[in-house]
Every structure is written in structure tokens, then in C-alpha cells.
Length: 548
Image (cartoon, rainbow, N blue to C red; front, side, top):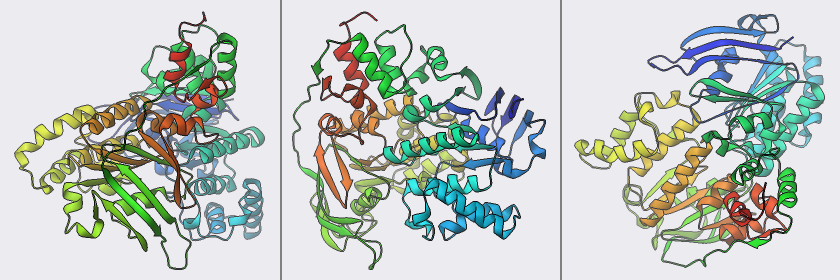
């Protein structure tokens, strides 16, 4: 008997003419691991929230939802757990052990049983070392693991996860998915997870469901979905091994993992060797310079940034990578003048931050996209927000339509203009926030996790847009966990560790030399193709060398 049955589910948000979900039907077997994929705004978050009735969105709904043999609305709330995209959004208490106990306390369990569940769960997840710590002191990966553990204390039959790795570094994201798969395998908990980062999650799933504009367009095992999406734009979101397989015209079984991708290359291209050449990097005038900068959030706390020196050239795209909590966002805040170092100096176009009087730095030169894009929204609709921001720059209101049209079309946000920014999906919020900032025509663009919530197709558009802006003279400094995006976009990359940016190199040299902070394509190419870190580079070296 199926655990979850969804039949002809339809949902429309208030004020919208289009259905967010349109005739969605599927069922989940007990103990299954199901991946929900689709472009930004396809309805993934809406579906997951409807299945967790306590956070279901307000709107017009029809169709049937059953958990076991009873309607979902009649079932106890603890049977389905939920983990959100943002690690901070679910944490409500001041100690790790309080957080673990919170759900069980709300279930009305006896104190002794709560203590037993909390202790057992903390041991299973290996979080005993931070049992008494404040959640604010944890890294993003630790916070998300705490959220998962807090849900598991309530012993749900099924867990819903909405892009849980979106804000995690590559190592933390892989560890989180491995932990989730372990729970599924060892405890038999049913998992339904929505994700854009599919390198780890896609091969781990038993089944994949594909949403497009609110409709379910494909479903099956990961390899069945590979064949079903072979000619569909969503194929660009699939793991690197699958994309290389398709680009080389293979008709055989689709590889999904790095191991399968390496076996595929060695089987069909055993004698092919090669090297990806890169152009030498040319220095230009400095846009941003950090000189021996140190910063801590509290006088008694350790340094987050420690004697950091960094030079970013004018008209350069510079990517900073590193683990959660390493100081990447802090570095951007120092450059933006939102935090002040206690030693060293930060210069923007040769002037210290203090030399920019009033709001001249922000009105004329620099804009900053934070990790939470909702911090930028002030009005009740996206269009009102864009228009008011444009006018605050001192530009005539009548010039707004012409200025905005270019970015609205490029970022495909026209259908979102009349909606409240807080009602949008994470990816849609990210697009609207980027439009708002780019309308200011800044000389320096600071981006904190710019691809969070964005689908693969739009990420390629963003790559192209940033390259055009660079050619027009804009300097872009971004911190990101998206190694593929950094490889496709950046002129140089650096790893932030121990308060400093290390090993600044061009992407091919940077990622080819890394074992962990690198692309899946680089792992597949290692030992066969030198200096090769992107799927397109592997394809270029292989094409025409053998029949598949």
C-alpha cells in the first residue's frame, strides 16, 4: 500500500490566473527516496508546503491527498517532517539540545522519553560535541544537520526537504545527502526532496519526479528520467556524467556518478589524452584592495578574517569559495563597508571606505546582493519595488519603463511584477533582487551565493549576462558554493581558509589542482585530461575520437 497518494492536485495563489500546480498525480511507496526536480517557479516548493499542512500556502486547492488510508488533513502533524532551504529559518531556541527537544515537547511527550529520544538522536547524528552550544555558533552545514536531527526526534514516517543544500558548501552538501540516504536506508524513512544541485542527489534517488509549470511531465528511475529528458532543456540540470554522455551522442546506459563517468570515458575513449589551454591572465588597475585586514564580531571572539590581503582588478569576475563559516560573507561586508576591520584597510578604486561621504559609495559605485534577497524588498509588489528603487537614485520616473525593460526581459520576471516579493520562490526572489541591483548600473557588483535557488538553464543566462557586464567594465566579486558556476564565470578563483584567501588562480588551474573544492568534470578528467574542469572541455577533447 502506498504511503502517500496525490491525485489531480490543483492549486492557485490568490490574485493569480495561472495554476501553480495543475493536475499533479503521483504516489510514494513506504521507504522510498524520491527527488523532485524542475526549473525555478515550477511548483516544487508549493507542492512540498501543501503536503506539510501546517505551512500550506493560502489559495484555491482541489484534488485528493491521502497518507496511508486516510485524508492528509486528518493525520497527526508529526507523521511528516519538513526541512526548509535556509538553515536559520527553522531554528527557534537558544541551545542545540533545546532545539532537539522542541518538537518532542510540542508533541506532549513525557520528559524521560524526550531525554531518551534527544540523546539517541544526538548520538546517531554525531552532534554530541556541540550539544550545549548556541545555534548561532554553528556552521551552515551543522545548522542544517541540526534541523534534520530535530525533525528525526519526532520519528516521522516521511521527510519533506526543500532544497536543503542550497546554502551549503560542496563538502557539507555531500555529507548532508549521505546522511539523508543513511536515514532512508537504515531507518526506512520515506524521503521527498526538492533540489537544483543534482550531482549528489540525482544518483541517490530511487525515483525522480519532474515538474514543469505546475505539471508533472516525467517520472521514473534516475536513468529512465535521463532518457525521458534527453531532448528537454532540463537535461542541463542533470549530473555532469549524464551531460557528457549526451553531448557525445551515446546510445548506451547513461552514467550518473563521477565513478560511472570515469568508466564511461575510459571505456569508449581509452587512448584519448589532451589538455585544455587557458589564456594568460592580464592585470589591470585595482578595483578593490584589502591590505592586512582583520575582523572579529566580538572583542573576545576569534578573528573571522585574519590579516587578509587581496587585490581584485577592474573589470574582473573574482570568485571566493570556502566552507560554511569560513568568512566569505564577512569579506563581502568588509568590501561593502557594512563591517569595519579593526586592523588594515579596504580601498575601492584607490580610496578608503571612509573617504566616500554620505551614500556616494552606494549611489554611484557599488551594490551588494546578500544571501537573503528578501532584505532588499520594501514594497508590496515587485514592480513597485523596482520603480521606487529607480527613483531613489534620482532618476526621472518616466525613464523607468525603458531602463527596466532590458533587465525584466533578460531575467524573465515579467510574470512576477504584480506579485508580492515574499510570495515568490527562492529562485524568483533571487532574479528580482538581481534586476533591482543591476538597474543601478554599478561599477562593482558584490554577490553572496548568486545561484541559490536558480535552475541550470537560468544559471547559464546569468553566466552570459555577467560576461557582458564584465566586457562593459563592471567588476564582480562573488562568494559561492556553486563550483560549476565559478568555473564557467570567473576570471580568477580563491579559497578562503583560516581567515585568508589562498591559491588565487584562473579557474582551470584552481579546480584542476583541487580534490574536494572542484567540479565533477574535473574529477572525471583527472589523470586523463590535463587542466580540464568543465563538461564542455571534456566533450571538445573527446568528440570525433570514437564511435559510441
